[in-house]
Image 1 (cartoon, rainbow, N blue to C red):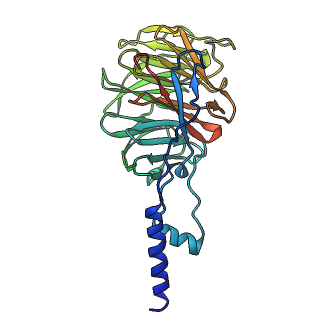
Image 2: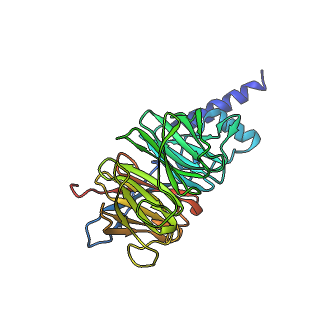
Image 3: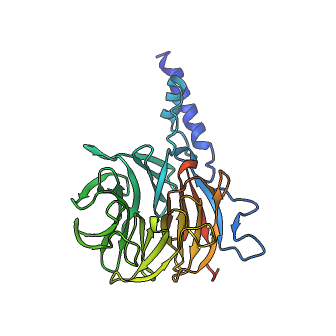
Length: 341
């Protein structure tokens, strides 16, 4: 009893201390604000903050965790290794990490981090993309396994889709008009549409004409815009309608404004602007639906709004822009500022 009493007092002390410690904000206010374009132009995007993994949540340690760290040393936090894509549902952020072969789930409200490995009998190998679906599930594109895995919002594995036509899937998007899950396959130079686990249509073949692709690296859908494809080795972006007919084709290889070196991912905001993330230029260029360049943000580096081989971009329902800054081992977060304020 004399041995247990000091341990009980210690446990109560560290538990109460942890409960009283105030939680810091996950994203602190940046002063002065970092915006694009720079003044005196009216800002359209401002920097919010970054996530690097579990430690970014600033969660309180539970009493049992504190006791364990006293006797066995602290457990190192789980950090991003090579983040490649982001999906967001409310305040839950899912980050595909090809370096760890896993998906991180960060619940910003509850300050909880989970490392998700997928199917216990067939875990992720190269989870390269994640997508939030309207049925409250998360789709995970695994390039090496050539599969689409589905998780619930707590990260529990539900089921897997696979098809003999898929060779190297790299990106997925949900087409709400036609109720299709589109998947871009970089090896086949095609995009496949799934319904209930079966391929029901396909789009493209290798080539440089409109509607053809050369290593498509990403796909996104927006009701007001259509299907947007990053046609990587044709150094362009294509926009297609619901009949899969090209509406706009823009970009070329070069180093001028509006040109591309390696378009890696695409996203669309609430006003129909198309964001093209360039892996080699290490920036984001914003276009209207016809392909007219509106603005650009970012450059190579490790500072705020700088990128190192960025791999993925997502725009959530609040017009927050999430960029998987792969070689900087972080996700940077920005906010689009609409013209109506």
